[in-house]
Image 1 (cartoon, rainbow, N blue to C red):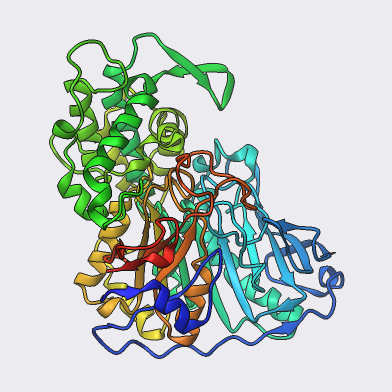
Image 2: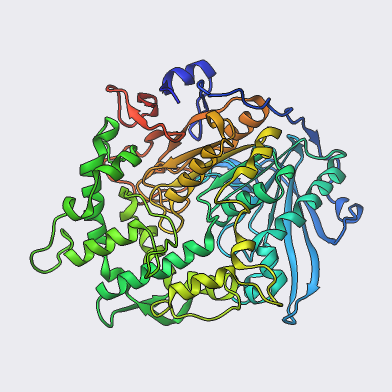
Length: 575
């Protein structure tokens, strides 16, 4: 992609927003598929009548209630008037004797734009999050705000079932991919019954496990959606979780013997204090060393490393961080610490060298609190739960610091008479290692927009980048006319870290799908004092609270033009 001046593109489009600005890319290497026909809207005639009017297969509508404009807010903006529909699909008695169903809510705008958005939620699901289709860190907008009909679900199990649903074969399948497959046609029928027409265009998106849901949908039900908004996707979630266990085992020998911290999931329990192996102050030291080596590679010393790939070649933790000659004091790392940091960032592997998961890029967000939580706390509680109950056949408990990762890795591909799909099969997009199956989706005119925090500690930005590169190698993305990836420097898992984490990529995705205008850059904002979406407390004190930066489509990099304020995106270009 050639360099494009952000400022010039803004002027040409006549559009400037605090949340996001689309810039067109003009150097495709082949003729892309024609845009899909744009959606046309409709009005909702009656909300409350839907509860009795709608008769949908395997579905019970529990309620339909009007929500007036302003009753729900996003940031400082009122969400328009809409109808809130709540229901349950496929209610059943599980093989474990528990009652299961796919709980959902749909929010139907009174003034509908003709589009449907499936909101993929994060973590292990288990609760129906408000169907707002929220976008970016500290969201100021969302799919509902923009006029979409939006669905959200619990993926087939309730909160109290979160620790056990993976033992029930159908519940783990619903979580993996079948809830999306079942909800999608029902939601489209519900929309048709409400407005007198179905959606003209359909989109699916989310971050973390929600990003995984979107990638799995692209591979399994590609005909159902026209646009896929994929954030920090855990599309190889079993391997990422096992990498966390492996990582915990690397940190443990460096931790303070006998030191413990509270278990956030058990008020009466404690966990080994793995954070003592690589303290917050030591992570700040490493972050500073990364900035010292890499910050200026994009032309500006501004505390943000935009040239991520160049930084990986430039930075070496063993030579660019001071080595402790005496006691640890936070300003240096011991040789043993450097060895472990290098191993963890290099990616998990078995004792015989088999790779388990991707490498992680060095970035200043290593100092973020979220980074530490994932590496030192969640690796001991959340990841072991998922590994033992959902991804393994047969399910089997584990002690993270004692687990044989080679043996656990083998359990991901096993099936038996009870669990007829492996953990790998139910969680990952078919063909993810060689995504040639995306060519049919591309030919139809569908599009994929991906984003990932470079300092994500649980799902690696390298993994997402490598998926796009595999897509390119099989010629399923010529000229980046089907999928584009936007790394977010400094950002941890889905938000936070020293980053500009407030942005909207849904609007650009819609323009790409329905108008053929490919996104090259989107303006992102930091969330400083007074931000309506909530303040990011991890921003450096010397940054403007309203700093903006372009998020550039990989492989281009936000590069300073040499003059103008370092706080303004218009003084950077993607090249």
